[in-house]
Image 1 (cartoon, rainbow, N blue to C red):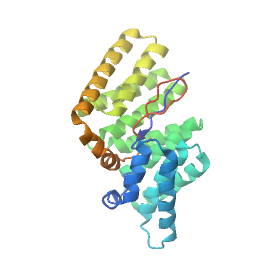
Image 2 (spheres, rainbow, N blue to C red; image 1 turned 135 degrees about the horizontal axis):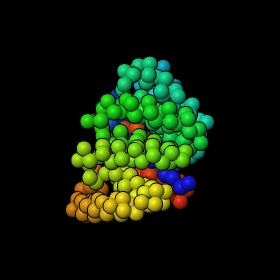
Image 3 (spheres, rainbow, N blue to C red; image 1 turned 90 degrees about the vertical axis):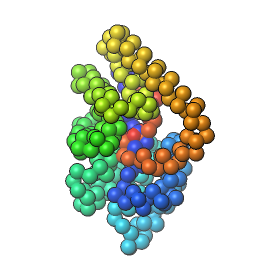
Length: 270
């Protein structure tokens, strides 16, 4: 069965408990830009020495170390270096759970990243558990970060689709779309990916052309609006890309990558 695993830029750059400090750090901005451009090698060249410097400094903030463990893990997951990525994710998760509130969004970010890692390896039960725990936390913050909630729901939909559980997958897709609608988000790149996946789900798996056509029409409208907005913003949008990438770095990715024959759509994994 063709399916798509959703992973946003938000899954590639962790928010970090010390975002104010990290946001001013040139390494974070450069890493964010490289990750957004899908330049995994460059992102790793930034993340590895950043983490090494912190690990060598006995006075480093443990949460900052966890931030870069998470960020490097996201890149390694993209490069399919799964064993090392899992070790770094787990170290980051242990630190964050130990020093932050159990419901902190950084904890959810790393859980979402672990879910993406497990799903990529076919470890479906572990992926399901990580996604559900991430979703439980993110739902508590849905008003502040609705896109993060929708991202994890889309990840769950892809997993249930892979597991031949179409009813649950459809429920997740619909809930993710409802989150975007309630928040009034109409031009997010992850919404475009979600609509594409939902259209293909209706058309190819459920053979429901009526709903597929309705979703396709909405997808075209969203894409037209995005093109108009991009043309109107012109160079201003381009100048803001790096800063926006850093500020929106929240655990869960920004475009979607190709799985099987489905159109690429990757983020926020994360």
